[in-house]
Amino acid sequence: MSDDRLRHYRESIDNIDAALVFMLAERFKVTQAVGRYKAENGLPPADPGREERQIERLRKLAHDANLDPEFSEKFLRFIIDEVIRHHEKLRG
Image 1 (spheres, rainbow, N blue to C red):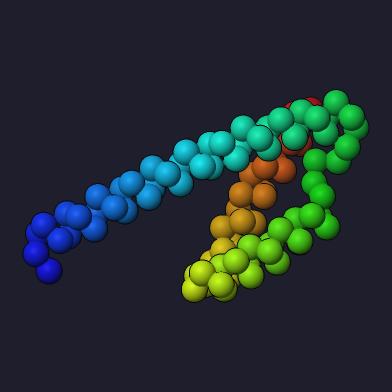
Image 2 (image 1 turned 180 degrees about the horizontal axis):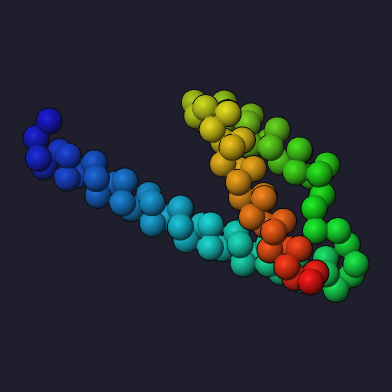
């Protein structure tokens, strides 16, 4: 593998990482709004039914994309846990 090829791969990885960070930031902006809405309306911070539906949906998408569904579930569960933690803080 030439240094130019490696550099090109790494630049692509860096671009993808940046896109992931911005996408996560946007997702958390929306989930913060959801958390405020839930707190204002006395709704629970977690919705286990929706969480399970989302996990199953993401597992299917991962499978279709040739990505390990176990990895995608772990990734989504990590995000969900963080969102719930934020919602619980908003409920305060």
